[in-house]
Structure formats: structure tokens, C-alpha cells
Length: 233
Image (cartoon, helix red, strand yellow):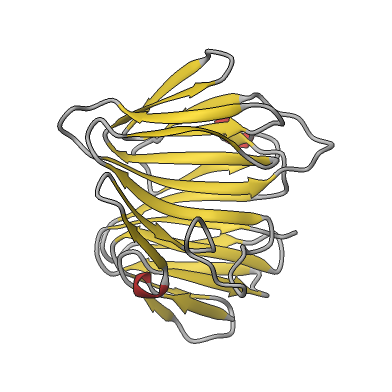
């Protein structure tokens, strides 16, 4: 079964210096029925105004993936370490007790736009504290995985994150590892269907909960950029 969640149904925030859309409960937006999905805790799209910054904060035991869509960001921890990531890159920050991260939009005239995911981390697993990946010009790229396969970001969880970049009319079928997945359109429209159900239609910013499907087929109706988060646990 595939259940759509439109962009209009998501939580919204507009603080002037920060605009955001929240898939799950986050900050001031609270829905007790939407506290996350399997090990996916947070899926936000946020826009920071030129020069704006998020003050350092600590996080629960999660792997944070920032997919930069526009602009350039700098992340700095309380040990003085810093790393930059620009449009076309993804950055993983492995949160630990006592470590805080701040974020700065480095441009004086360009907004910083990014997708942010939080994935619960297994306490028995370890990975590098900061990882960076460059997106390739291809229709499908494994963005993150439990073992860093194919040069992907290495997660502390049984999750596979796929980045999709499809041309109009292009179709792609991906197998799923377990009973749950989440599909997020970053921009563009598509149809999505499993083996035994009618296609569901998504437009820009829409998402979809995928239940009990062994594979998912996407067909782009416009130029499509999307994330598929495979959540078997």
C-alpha cells in the first residue's frame, strides 16, 4: 500500500530568516500520529536566508543527513571542527552525547536550501563522525547505506537512502528490503506503484508512506528529483 502525504499537509514555519516544511513533528509543529516512521525521525526541507545561522545544539543519537539543494553551508562542532558542503553534495553528521553542531549560510546573497534527515542510530554501531558525498549525474545513486556500499554514506542503522534524478517519461524500479519505505519528491511529479496496487500520483514536495511492498516503480511525469528511504526495521 502507498499512502500519499501532500506538501500542504506538512507542518510549516516562516520565521523570516528560516522557512521550513516538516514531514514529522518538529519544533513548534506537533502531531502525535506523526512522530517519525520506523527509524526515520525527521525529514525537513529548510531555507536559511543569506548569512543566517542556526545556533549550536546537541542532538539525540541519530545520523543527520543534509542534502544541499542550493547555496553553501558550514557546520561547526563544539570541538572547533568545521566542514563545508555546497549544492550537489550530501553531508552526514553522526551525533554523539556532548557534541553540538551549528550551521551557517556562507552566502551574503543566496539562500541556503537543503533537505535534512535524522535516522535513529544503533548504539552498537560506529561510523565516521563527518562524511561527505558528491552527487553524480545519473538517474539513481545510493546516497546512504548500512555498510557504505558503492561509496555511499555509512549509517549506523539498517536503512538505504536512494537519490533519484529522472527525465520525463523515465521509469525506475527499486527492490525494497522490508515492509516500510518513504518516498519524497524534492521537485517534479511522478507516479509510484508497487506490485499489486494502482499507481499513486505525487507532485512537487509530496511524500508517500510505502507499506508491505517488495519493490517500488516510479515513472517521472516531469523532470523529477526524489529520495527513496528504505526502512526495513
